[in-house]
Image 1 (cartoon, helix red, strand yellow):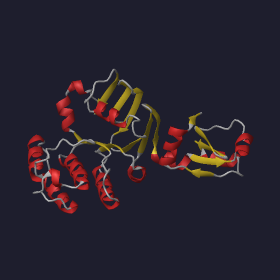
Image 2 (cartoon, one colour; image 1 turned 90 degrees about the horizontal axis):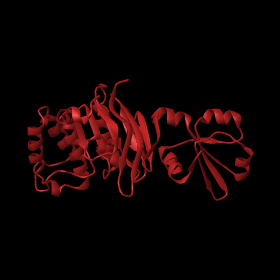
Image 3 (cartoon, helix red, strand yellow; image 1 turned 30 degrees about the vertical axis):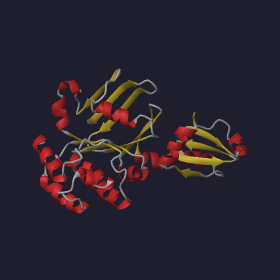
Image 4 (cartoon, helix red, strand yellow; image 1 turned 180 degrees about the vertical axis):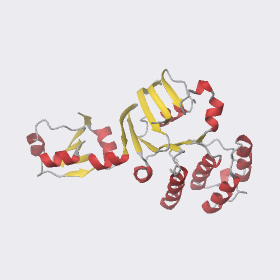
Length: 286
């Protein structure tokens, strides 16, 4: 399987935070969602992949190469949308496009013109005059317009209304349709990830908790809520996470169907990404 991004045993240390032996694989031609609570390490991992911070240990390859093998050429093949914007506030949208057109030989101005009109963004408007939603759309469009092979996006749909988010998600699906393009994106809007991701990576407190195909997660994992007496009667059944709440117990079950056959009187519900995140952050791992 060809990998667009490979991260092995990545360690990043700050004064009060540490990424601990992070391992990530992003298969080429797929959409990978990167999820975790605020401060879990999503942005730190992304900027490490882009070689924007120093890391103490590990190996990072993009398109099979380390950045030291040709950072400038590698980054020409990547479209980036980070949380912070690098656009000059007093530049008009038209001027931003002109600058980027000089930087990227494959810049598609027709793509920009069509999608700026669709998004209702006036090319004569200064960046600082754009609404939060317009800024978010503009950042995504400029990341795609130079026809990169890989998009790396940090909270790309934050600040967008549901209709605008859906438009952007459709754009992402079109981008990977030929299976020659890849997207790695972080988001706290897990419904967006459920709509378009092929794989989901969960990170918690600087460590990767789970890297799984989305369909496998939604088809096989489950959430069990039961009384404390029922939990005591289950003996040593396998589970992934456990949380005690008032008057009940909650468990993340890896094999929902298998558990249901063994304990037909108990109901294991299909788990959502949000519920799994909550169990990772508030529960205890088996």
